[in-house]
Image 1 (cartoon, rainbow, N blue to C red):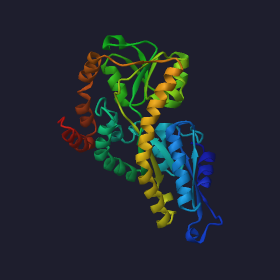
Image 2: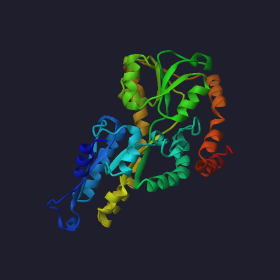
Image 3: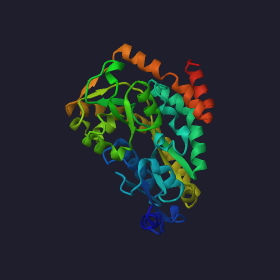
Image 4: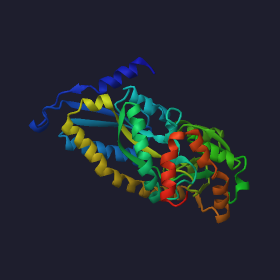
Length: 334
């Protein structure tokens, strides 16, 4: 990390007085950069900007969150948790599954087929969120809101309707769970950050991508791939956090505004995820790609081949045992 960027970012988060109304005059205006790797058109970035607008209005301009999209601050996805922890940026929109090198439990919802739909994911989050909040506190930050990505698909050059058809296909994966899943079903996975994915597709280093339909649109996959298979095999979420040292600079009244707004907006942001999936499916097909609904036998084979991964994850990450087992009990799958 270059000293120039560190200094510039901390300066950007510095205190500057504005002519604020009397009700918030005690709170000097804070301009807070929020780092995200996603482009302006991505629904997570749109959500972050909506949150920023609401916070600015709710604090009468005392808190000005400046969403820096497209990785323009120079932080890659796996660096975001550490960047906020170390105060290199005051806020970030963090992809949980990319932080497992530092905090393995952040990969729990990426276990293949642990949740079959967004309603089941809500139940899983009921048990996981307290664990994520412990992780955030350990890393000197506070979670403001969490929003899932649409479920993951297999975007490929070829149409596959059986496990045998997937064998040896080189595929980009975003995290270890996806890497292990693709290895288990005979594919050849490569763990590649989003920022390097398009280059890998363009060069032919991979012939497919495990990701959401939204990312498929972001990457204009129709320029490289022909089919997207609705395997619904894994989930992940973006977590917007704020550095706790920065949070302490904010008056208690304005802290409450931020936290209350995050809680109020989060359910709406979850709905944007569902809409983004539907909209992105249409954009992918409009671009020339074809939806593939995996045959029931293929789905059954995928589930059977990956079922041991729940126990393997718990063995590897003991802190995940209590929340995952509680979730499985509630879902009557224990």
